[in-house]
Length: 235
Image (cartoon, rainbow, N blue to C red; front, side, top):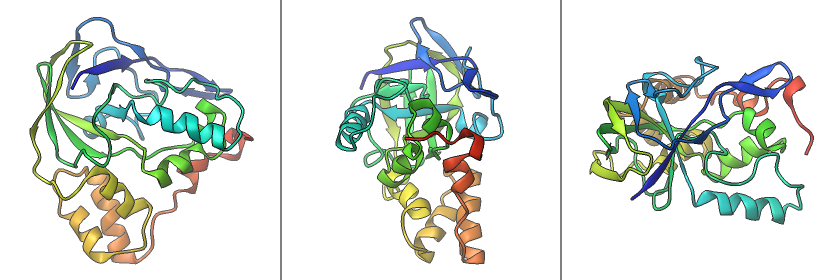
């Protein structure tokens, strides 16, 4: 399966808010370290980047779904066209979605070895990026979030490299199922326990599952999904 690579630098997303969601195509071979692609910037290191979130994959086939959604809702044209890199991903391709990919999947990509660590948790910056006040919520509910990866082996990646599955240690835990357990279903102790006992799942996601198990209340996603009042666009 051939992929496309994208990287970018921080730029103003809204007055007073800088984001590195703006990505452009990588046209030359690029080195990928344990922290991601060389030259790819992260401006909010609390919520983005790091060892567990070094790379972001977003399925290219989802963009046609988003265009259909926009038209069905009779929304104005988005601020950003529905095309690969629009969601700030580093990697995109056709043939692998959240339903197929599993937590812990290991892939060879060029010289690197990468592993799926967690689903993406969509945030309010996507609302600003496209100009739709509830886009992040629609993404979370639909399960079309993409996923994040850690880098197990560093190396060089060609811009049209082939993504090759090497190992699938947790075939019962797709990215979609993982996201649904935490985001889109009622509290289920067996499912939450599964997340806490999956070592390939990022520590942050395991902690969220453990907290829900222990305290009986799900995390409050409102600030992440909607953002501060000053950054909430009107549809």
